[in-house]
Image (cartoon, rainbow, N blue to C red; front, side, top):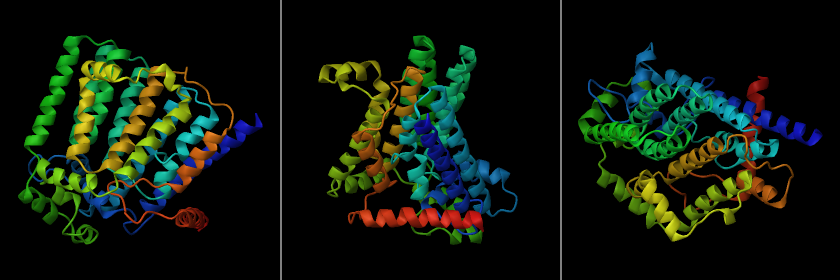
Length: 391
């Protein structure tokens, strides 16, 4: 059909445009074009001892050849983003989503068009965790031997925790319910898995780092890499923060007067999933008794509200939860997802809101973002990308 071909063409353009955007800001750039916090986060490594969230940084330090991490980090970020797009595309195609559903996923405020257009999320560690999550789901789809799938899941879960224990807390809750329902693992196997996960979490928490470790990582960086990062506030310093330190920042988020705006982003998360998958809420029991029963059976999900209390990066949590919900729904429904075949008013509203909305990675700017400013940023970003390709 002509309509489907047109929408598929737009989706293909979004993929290519988004990859070009990331390439322009990473492997084709001589300057740091994304947030310095994201860059410094990827430089946390193991300076002669284990440090939480240091796995990616350690890999970067191993493959780097000139002790200037800037170019190596950008290559890793770009490759990881390309993998993310390929895995997303693969799962969507395996579930046979309609062209409209595919398009809505791409242009939602959580999709690759939005995050690359507004230059955020793609260099963050959640992208690495989400890639591991989608790889584990792909193993399920390929129906690999259960024992092999179990071993790979354990290894993947441990790597998630070593990359970022906060995002891993959310992802593992989804993995547990997926493996219970899709692989029918026994309670004994599940206890072994959760014990290994708990031990890894405990190890990470009790070796969280310190000011001395942070200083060791900082002084080990090249002068060029240090020049790209504010010395007084960066992710390297943050590895020495305690849970209490993080909670103090969370209080700022909760009592800043921006809670209504955060509820808007949560509503967008739910609304986007409902519209894409044509979910009828009447088919779900949303009573307190049903929710209580779910949490008793799937108690691992209790870590999610806890994370919102001890961690202040609410945008990152919401972004990750969307993708975890999206691909978990796909794995449960397989290719039986309700097909969205016709354009409608809710789709138009979702498209418009998505193009005009930017979800911050961490904290909200109280001044807000004007619609005219968003339109300007969209047009300028497209213009710059086209010019860079032509040149």
